[in-house]
Length: 215
Ligand code: URA
Image 1 (cartoon, rainbow, N blue to C red):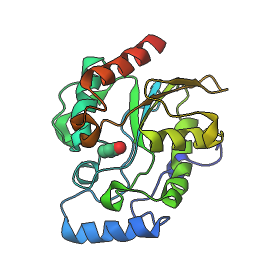
Image 2 (spheres, helix red, strand yellow):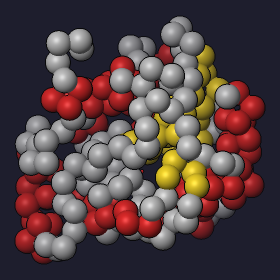
Image 3 (cartoon, helix red, strand yellow):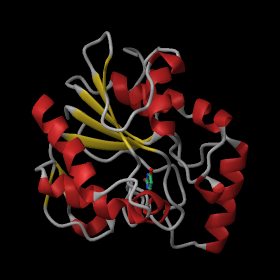
Image 4 (tube, helix red, strand yellow):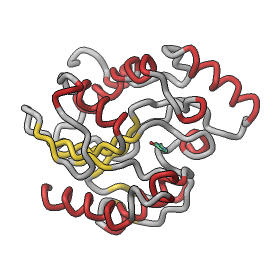
């Protein structure tokens, strides 16, 4: 890590490690030339204590705006909650230029490129792990990781050096890693989960209350 600039460990704009995602990006560049259409960088300072890990950019949300969850339906609840709990300041207007700032929090995705139908393959999740690892290694004050959904949970567990079976995904569970970092699980704040009532605003607020109590 020490001899290598961390920026070399971030995906390049034309990252071709996942051929299917690179092909999809090319298609989208033609179809939606005004979109960001590249691996979406993490948002927030590296000296934050909280890292929120989502799944992957949505086609017309984060892949459009170039900022995680920004413009995605899931971002409405996420950013409103971050503002409510003081992990963000300013106004969220679903675009990168809204000036919103994160406070002691950073947001990333387990997979940095938009996958077709919002579904990355196991190989793509595995391939993108090196970038998630960089996140963990370059956040010196990291205390809490919030995983949004099972795929994020599994990616965080394996990237942290554990077997997937070592920690079971349970909404509201807090898992202790040997390095002192705590992993908190939440159902993903997706449109499907909020519309079906699997995740209510109150349940999501309870997760952020738990995070606030830990920090
Ligand atoms: N947008 C993101 O950036 N990540 C998700 O997990 C969902 C929507």
